[in-house]
Every structure is written in C-alpha cells, then in structure tokens.
Length: 511
Image (cartoon, rainbow, N blue to C red; front, side, top):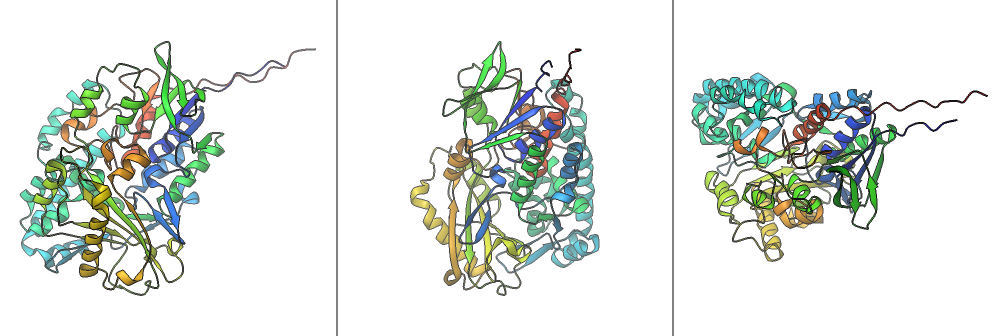
C-alpha cells in the first residue's frame, strides 16, 4: 500500500473566540488544525475562572447576533442550538442615573416607546428616526462591509460615497444628539461603542447600527456563560480531527522561502504548517511574533501612533446569601456617574484616572444559578479606565485597591445596599492583567480603537500585508471587536483562505 498524502496543516495562534471560529472554518475547509493558547481554558477573553464555588466569566457577557454563531456551526455541518443554550434577556438592561431616573431597554417596540415617552416625551419622534438611521447603517455596515474582506483599497474606494451619504464622519454621540434632546436619552443611544473599545464622541456613527442589532436579534445569555460557547467550539474542532494545545505559548512565527511556515513555542518546540492564523492581538503579532521581519505597513512606529481602545478595571466578586436580596437588580445594569463627555475625555484623551466612574454590573446568577453556590450571587462590575500607554500612566499597584473601594462605595449607595458584609470572594483585573494574561498592547481591552480611519481597510487586514501565508483573526482586524465582530473575522477569513487540497486516497498495489 502506498502512503496517502497528509492533509494541509493550519496553526491558529490563540484560542479566543475569533481563533476558535477560524479553526472551525479551516477544519470545514479540510485543514488539519492545531490551536495553541497559553491559558488553561479555551475562550481567551471569553474564558472563566472558578473561585470559591463562583464561576467568573471574564469578558463578554451577552450574545447579540445568534445567527452568526448558527452560521458558523452550519458551515461545519453542526447545529449550534444542540450544543449551546441561549436564553433571551427581557429586559436587555437597565440604566440608572444619579438623579434617580432610570431607563429599561427592551426588544418590544411598544415597550421601548413607552420608556421613551416616560423619560423624554418630546423625543419620541427623534427616537424613531434614530432607529431608522440605525437600520440603514446595519444593512450597509454590518451585512455588507462587515461580512466581506476589506483588504483591497478598491473595496474602500467604491463605498466612500455611501460613507459620505450616511455621514460616517459624524460621531455616535453627535448623531444621537441630532435626533434627541434629553441628555439621558443621548447617553442611552450612544454608550454602546464603549463595549467594543470606542470613544462615543469620536467613533464613527456607523456604530449606531448596534441599536438595530438589539431590536432585530435581541440580547441573549449563553447558559454556562460565554465559556460554554468556547468549550462547544473546542469540541467541534476536536470532532473535526483538530488539536488544542493549551498551556503553550507561541514566541515566533517561522518564515521559509518568504512565507509563514509554522511557529516556535517559548519552550523551543517548532511546529510546521502550510498556513498560520494569528488570533493574538494584531499589535502583538506584528511587534513580537514577527519581530525579526521588517514590516512595510505595521511597523513598530506605526503601531505606536495607533489609537488603542481604553483599558478596563473589572471587579469579580461573590456574595453570600443574597439571591433573594436586591430584587430590583436584574442581569444587566448600567450605573451612570455624574459626568459623561468629560469622563470619556479623561479616559481616552487625558489618560487620567478620574474620581468618578460609570459602572456596568453583570449579575448572571439571576438567570444561571450554576455560576454560584445555592442562595449566593456572582457579580462582575466593569469600569472603563485609561490604557497603559498614556504619558502620565496609572500606577495600578497603588491605585487598584482604592479604586475598588470607590467602586464598592458607589455600589452600596446606588445599587446594592449592605454589600460589604456579604462579599465572600473577590478578584480584580486591571489593564495590567489584560497586558499580562492576554498579551494585549498597552493593556487595551479591545485592541485598536474603531475610529473611522482605523476601521475596515484601515485596520490590519485579515490576510496579512506583511507575510504571505499569514492571516489575522480577532478584535484587532476587520470587522472588529465584540462577539459578533470576532466571529465575523473568521467568516471573512474563510473567504480568503483557499480550500485545503484534497487528500489522496489510499492505493492498494495489484498483486
């Protein structure tokens, strides 16, 4: 019997959601895939830590476009809903302001219009116009640009007139301010870019499409957390014959005959491949993993001039005997501080750690009891903060505990009275944690900020400009951050990577 040809090999660096989705797509295209990640669990920022019986989901907490995941599973001949259970959220979230007013976001049109009429009755007409604007940008920005490659300059040039027509030069906040007058409603319609690392006062108004995403698809929670999605993705990869090497770190992308040919791990192990996909941050990929190769576009100097997303301060904590307490606190709550624009300027422009803060509070135990012991709660509270690259950087070794204490005081006063004596577990992530755990440049929470000149063609391309045989996935490439975005990078990638060559069948020699 003659030997059959081996399948073409692909290495995926990083088991974040973008890397796992890319591995699934490559497996469906016939590649023998190996995924390499330095963490102990798949998921990257979507992984988890269990401590004292509490499962802390570390990063993304919601799914806004389930169809993207269903399409991914279908490309692999699988049914997403057989592997993962999604639970629709109703309401989506509640926003609370310092004056005691609140706003509850829901999918139902009548319920939302009732909220608008209660909060800002004069803005109902403007709100309807804003939703129409959001849908226009969804069809152009998400279904069109976001689902196809943008690595050719011509792809950008031919859509520039549409960008101009939709006033992509205007910021998300500026667009909201043109449609509604109430400052609270302006906040409610413009804060969403913060969840993909953008400054609402500078990010292109194309991102108001998120309001249509919520309305059209709803907001969902994956039972078991986003970690459950990552584990299900890993299982699909294994079922395809792929391999996950956890607890291993890539130190360098290897080059032979002018193209990527594999990787070298930090322990010196060399692994060969026909193609390499990097789900590591684009900045880390080009500054570290390709440090021995000169770069034409993504040089160290270019990356230093790049605007990066803000950092994140995240406090994960468990509480004892509180499941029946705080009955008015749902799964998702946003507790707004006294300032909006000035606070955002402190974070993104000045790099200043302000005295005040706004908080996103995640209480998954009201939906998923598996995250905490019986009768207890698990919380995740996030505050946007400056990244590590500002001139007068924050000394987190000194500031982390005082900042957590301020966060606790705000939660006690505005949302969770009696919290202090109920805390049973505690874990804090600062931008330094993101730098060290995820190898994120400057400890940025969402890679490169999605400003207009850092989006689409202007982002690092999915097919590397610097090295043939290298492809990029994840938040730092097109279409960008967020669960739909990073899953979308794999969809774009699949359009750029050729199918693996068919494996020759075994031949039996005639006797």
